[in-house]
Length: 128
Image (cartoon, rainbow, N blue to C red; front, side, top):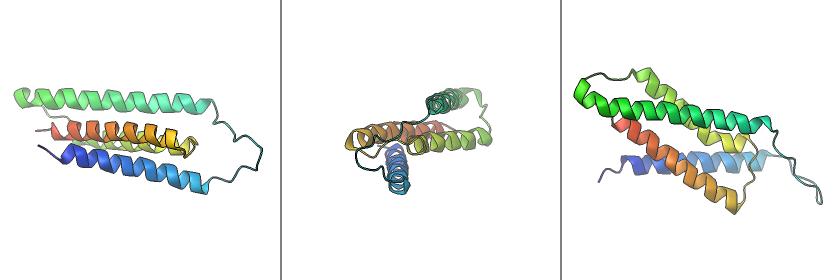
């Protein structure tokens, strides 16, 4: 069994959860009795755009990496760097968007980050 994707998933979880914890720690405390401010509505469209870009780029790298074993055409290294940057942006987005550090959101971020890390690792490993 190849442990690379599992290590990548664990590293992605560490990045996302650490960012969420640090953002929670640095966020100013909400006075008692007040409701925490909601993230701006524009942030949801930014997250959707980041995730769409990451999915498209990763899907392209997986498909071309798989096909390159027979065609010999390899995607440029810069696309892998761009995919890594998009993956990191997707992992940091929940913390930057102001997601609260609660068990419910922590669980969601953990599973999401594991999927991002695993998928990114597979895209890189398919490169011949």
